[in-house]
Length: 107
Image (tube, rainbow, N blue to C red):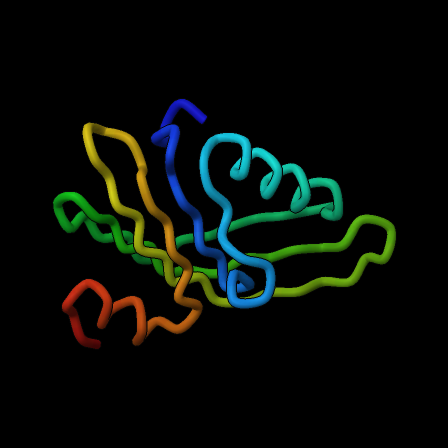
């Protein structure tokens, strides 16, 4: 949690269904929930761009369910905003094009 601002907000792809997570406690709950149901949870970012006070990270997330062994892999397209060296906001757009647009870039 030392890299996150105390009021940081994370909007994962499922935020439309479950809402965003905010603050250290909200982030801890989100990460704990993910790890509780995962045998394996790995993010692989193949394209990371420093945009000053923001970072664009494009990659994939691989999840294997604990007990079930069900494997899911999906795209990550995250924009992270920083202030005073701490992450204040993360949003996973899911779609590469939407994340690029959000930071004013194109393919």
